[in-house]
Image 1 (cartoon, one colour):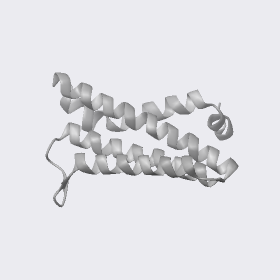
Image 2 (cartoon, helix red, strand yellow):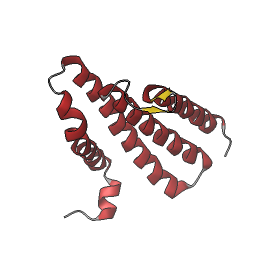
Image 3 (tube, one colour):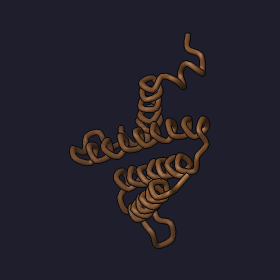
Image 4 (cartoon, one colour):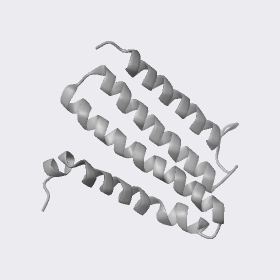
Length: 130
């Protein structure tokens, strides 16, 4: 039996939990309707792997931030979280193209805007002097 502290210290287990959670949550609404669409399912799986990896890195950087508490780690954590949200919008656009809009802005454009914000947060964390 794993305790919470042991799970948070074991990065491979955190990675496995995050991967299976993302796939488990998004399998029925996103993956299954597109299983027989040859290249579209691969495009969706590509973005789902981005969501999984970005979520894992967000969790790891949040754990590091709770220990060290520097602004660099805070900005890095925010950057990874923004990238995870960006990939979620990319999954939405890959699964249901030209369906979801926020006003005149499509989900694809929102994903690109969030990816640009990710780069900005990484730039802040790199050039920050703590």
